Image (cartoon, rainbow, N blue to C red; front, side, top):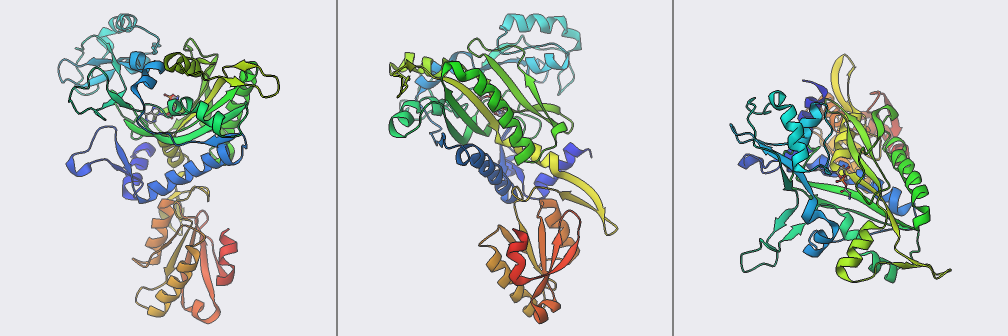
Length: 455
Ligand code: GAP
């Protein structure tokens, strides 16, 4: 097994990620977070929130709805042009993304290209293009396939084809349509940001690469509203700050990260870059997009809604539509990058082990408490007492199953930084063995000092 496969296997074995609806054969592009996955995901989101909202007094949070008026998606351009080029294998009916196939062949294809342009490139490589499933080279021409997921919300007549309600394709639109609410009801002044974490849905043609491309995923997005003259400087500042989130806060190695400039900018953008992570097997792939979006978003919503989404400078009286700098990160991709970054194998005490060297803040469980022997009630009750105290300060776990070595291995695999073992000495002198994950080093620590030591 290569590292990529080992991470997928660990994710299932250790309750990080389960395929959705597994007992019914699964559902393509949809996954569930298991008990440890939900903790890791929450820790990533908490660090992002802390960094964006808590540390910036001019950034406020929002939790807008997944459902929005369909007018939102018409105004934003998603209904008309949020699509990927789809082609179908005539032999096995597999659907593939034509732009991905072209990229693998060294061609450049992006969302601005028309179906004709894509099909011209496909024709050039006709004989090289093989179906990833059946290996045959017989495809339909590529056509644009809209990625918005439709719902029947509020439609009781049964025919929602001409005006469906969509599940949101990005959290950003919920921010733009609340711009006026936030300006009118809080004390924010430009420049300021609105941050949001939440689910997004896209009808991805070929969801793949584990949780890298999902149909239901979560975004951590921040839209920064700035004076038009300051937009370039803010963009530069945010691209640096966002990179530091990965290197300094999440502690990813610098060499596993890079910026990638967008080759072709959408007409309203003045700059756009991705932060890419070097995934095992996949190589460098986007985990976050940073975009200078001009006044496009607030302008299109102003035009369609008829409500002026502008800002009046309280000092100069100048009225303008703020420009937006967006930092849009994908939780699932950052989660996958985190597992990739901290997955390790080594030898400890003559045994091979798998260890997730997660930073303390990211670890799903911070401390595990064990009685040395399960069948000694005095050890079990002392260990429970310690666990019951620690759990108020840390996500803790009590474990008395299997031998101590197995319990350590289990905790190593989920990245628990500390294990505490209660043994017979504990009953005499109120000390426990504290074992550190990365080195396996053990030391005696007084129970009264445990909390501080772990902190
Ligand atoms: N509001 C801007 C926006 O949504 P995007 O580049 O389409 O931009 C932003 O998405 C981030 O969301 C990406 O960098 C990626 O991390 C994540 N993302 C996008 N599509 C995804 C998918 N199908 N599965 C998982 N994450 C996805």
